[in-house]
Structure formats: structure tokens, C-alpha cells
Image (cartoon, rainbow, N blue to C red):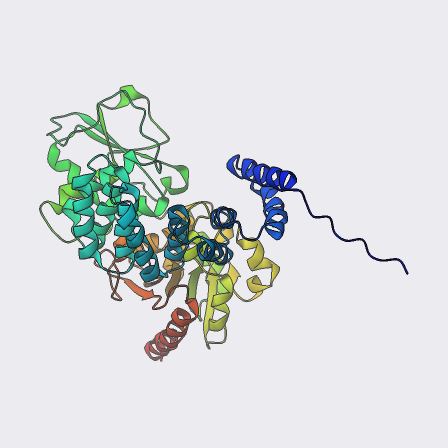
Length: 467
């Protein structure tokens, strides 16, 4: 009888070469090529804690958070005293909402690295995630005093102050966003406005970050009129250009950057809030938005066959390029549990790459795919005004519906954007909005159970009003 050959045991030199090749590919960003090499190496060297931790970092960057946690726990079990491994485990635990353990790990590391500014910034961040905004602010203020030039500490302090509704100090410190790697600094030769009276100068206001931020903070544009500008010019992008026509506080709207001889000074949109909050401590009303008649006509025609039903516009995901999108978004299939509510017809207002899965499983046969036909945000706004209710994840749709004054339910993950704060069903930023929060990290099922109960009640009220 022939015997099966024994598998070859790699020599130490061969195994070390495999390790080096894996790390070289990973560092070069060749993730698809590195992944199978990690598998081969760790099959043969399961006690290499650093490689487990590196694999965990790779999986985290790829959005495979559950697998990343497993890899990091294996690394930590092997070498709990290695600081980089403890930090990597804390990172993924914080991502997944296991913040108490993440905080404990970070505090332990801080004992051995008391002068590490990034570690202090992350401790402040996890305190904010736990809803301990006062503790976060106190800790980060002390950290800023010790490390005045560290932008990550400054931005985490700003976020914590904003989450605690200290808008004056929060927005002042928010200027640190330009010193991190998140945003590309402006390359403009004309001077940035310093807040002094404009005395007839033309000022250009520049958008930043996402479309939702632009819609949310456009409410502060009228504040510029008190500085007596000759003209307020708002730079915008084509998806929101029609929506912004006639925007209060704006004399001229331009798509894309204007020539520098068209303005005298410039500022960022999110530099404007302090002008308001230094005088009034509550947010101003949302800005008025323009919906063209052709968008209204189009929306009415689209929903006409279901005019006698309770119409719910739904969105389940924001931009996939936003690094926290995996946690603030959920599967379109969560809306399946609302499909059997009598008299309800859902309309998808989503447009983006996740439509493929929505169509592939037949969801579009029961939830009307309206959003993919939109030309821009003005079309989306017109559809919203035809709905009885909007239910959305935390994305631009929420800000759009709230600014239009549409009834909107925004579904929030456990570590929501600072504007929504950490608790409560309402927000002063949008009077027509109701917030549904995760009570347990990553538990969308619990959120949708409450949404379903509330939706039954809303439909009953709608029926009574029609009777």
C-alpha cells in the first residue's frame, strides 16, 4: 500500500521569507495579494502575535470588523504586554461598541506611555462614545494643555464640546480639522476672512465635507449680512445646485471654483456657526431649499398610482467612502419587517452601489425604487414632499428631510454624529425629526422593533384623519 507523503515542514528561512513578503505587500497596500499569504503564514506560525495583530489591522481596514476582533484577541492573548497589540485591540473594540473594555485597555497603555498624544486623543474619543462628554472634555482639555500642537487632541476636544452642546468653544476648536489628514487645505491666494467687517468686500463661501453637512449648515449663511458684504458668493456642486437656488443669505451661486478675481476674501461654510452661537445658544431654523416645478411634477407622477396609501420614503446607507458608514448604515432587508403593515407603501430614496443587492433579492418589487431615477437632490426633495414619512439612516437624506420640514425618523447607531447628541428622541436642529437610537451597539433589530410599533400608530392616526 502506498503511503501518503508527509507534508513538508518549511524551513525557518522559508517561513521568514513568507513573513517578510506578506508584510511588504501589506505595507504597499496590496491587500488582495497579502491576504492569502497571511493565511499561509499563520497556518504555519500560529504563535506570532504581531502577525495576528497586523492581520487584524488589515481586516479592520477592509471593513471585516468581527474577524478583525478575533485576530486582535488572538494577538493580545499571546502578547498582552506589547503596546501596539493592546492599542490595536482597543481600536477594534471601540469600533464595535465595546467601549468600556477599550477604555480600560487604553488607560493601561497610558500608564506606560504617559506622554503619547494620540493615545490621549483616543481616550477622549472613547469617553465621548460612552456618552461621558463632560469627562471627555475635561480629559482632552488637560491633554491639549500638555500637547498644544497635536491636532487630533484638538479635533476630539471639539467633537466632545459639540456633542455636549458647547457650540461656541466646540466650533472654535473645530478649526483643527484643517490640521489633520482628513481634509486637504485650501490652495487660494486671496486672503481668508478674519471675521472683521467686510465693508463692501465680496466674500466667497466654500463647501466642505459631505452634502449633508452643506445642507445642515447653510442655515448660517444669513449671518454674513451683518458684516456688510458687497456680495456673498456660494460655491457649490452640481448635485445640490438646483436645491440651493435662491438660498437665503446668498447673492450668487456658482458651481465649481470661481476665478479669484471674482471675490476679495473667502471662508469655509463651517466657520460661520460661531457668528450665531456667540449671540444665541440654540441653532437657527433650517435653511429654506428650492424645489423646481419640474421636479415636483415628476415626483407627483411617480407616486400617483399609490396616492391613497401611506407613503414612506426609506434610505439605508450613506456614502461608502465615509469611514464610519458600516456602523451608521444597515441592510435594506431591515425594511422587510415593515412590509406587512396595512396601507403602507415604501419608496426607496436611495441611489448608490447598494442598489445592486436591493434589486438582486427582489426587494424592488415591494419597495418602489424611486431614488435611482433622481437627477439630483432637488428631485429627491420633491419626492420627500410627496411622502407621509421618511425613515432614513444618518446620511444626507436626514438633513434634507429635516430642512424641508418633512416628518422624518432618523435611525442612529450607538456612537452617533455629534449633532444628534447621545440621548433623547428629538433634536433642536430639526423640529420635524424623531430620533431612534441603538440601545445596544450594532443592534438594528431593536431599533426596527420600535420603528414598527411606532409606524403602526402613525398609520392609525393617518386613517383616522382620512375617515
